[in-house]
Amino acid sequence: MSIFDLTGRTAVITGGNGGIGLGIAQALNAQGCNVSIWGRNADKNKAAAATMSAGPGKVHTEICDVSDPASVKAAMKATLDTFGRVDGCFANAGIGGGGRRSFIDRTEEEWRRMFATNLDGVFHVFQAAARHMTERAEAGDKFGRLVATSSLASLFGTARNEHYAGTKAALNALCRALAVELARHGVTANAILPGWIKSDMTAGIMANDKFVANVMPRIPVRRFGEPTDFGGIAVYIMSKASSYHTADCFVIDGGYTAF
Figure (cartoon, one colour):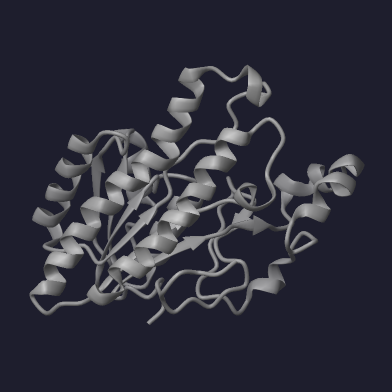
């Protein structure tokens, strides 16, 4: 079973009210998966749920600050009270950017904020989901999917955005370790590595000669993808707000997703 095949099951989506997270939520809901969207903004959560009103799966939203363990615990309890179980956890909450200052000019506050949002949040959410999934496994119900969104920055680096690349590289390592630890419980852990695809958002970047000459050679695929490249992947997700697709031509069937 693909990690994206959760027909008739229930999944938690963090950061599911925009960009890639919303695309994941919509795709799962369309296949009949119940979806619980966790986000900090009630209005955005409500708007995201409205986009799935015609889907066969039920939609639930929770106010949740993924960097706060107590908030995550409360959101998990509310989701379990609503659906009875959680089969998949797609952690997409995170922030990038943070200005154009160099590494040596970064403040302690900027560094901590990046880690708290991009890494601590995934830790808290994954831990809550994994505890629930392993408890079920001990009762004979071995099934679970943990998925984190990584970044090309974790592979080839990025100028003046080192703290972002560091958090995403740490997520890759976390998923590798979890894939080993949780395999006996029937729980898989994957890191989805987005890749560049041609879109209105990337048109300006592709027209930048310096970017093409200096950065493109460091990107593993060596070129921007065409939409037709991705017809064979497990699920194709893209929103108007995003220039990424969520799987780099992979068909994923569990375990750690190799880059």
